Image (cartoon, rainbow, N blue to C red; front, side, top):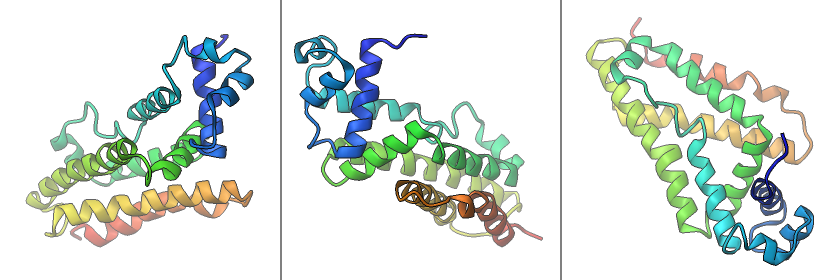
Length: 200
């Protein structure tokens, strides 16, 4: 199916922003690669910032943002380790996805410069997930499925390595190095984590 001009603008912009940086990329650069005039680009986006905002909004469709969507906290708590595996698998799959890789590169470059990106990343990728998983761990503790501990600390301890492994995959790919050593780390993390919190 042929992509619309707007889709092409976003695709080219993402590639240029993630490769050259947002500041270094001009509207002229984007329009030239898309094969349209600058005025033609302005028929779809007000300016370069509007393009960036649209790309950031696509992050809200990320599987990481939707980990707990349409899931009942009680049901998740009953599933125990299997749900943790599903989270880790989600992180692994998007780590090797090209579009997600480009979005992550863009995020990392702009986190220190753009308050909107900082808020989106911190709130929707991390804090919301930590809060929801801490609620799950609270129920597991009450039902004596896992050891008594600080649920928020547990949620942070679970998520932090996944974000680290994801970043390592991206860094290795940037340098053209093999990522095979990290392929199993996501699942190994779940095993290690669960063995340290479960009640035998």
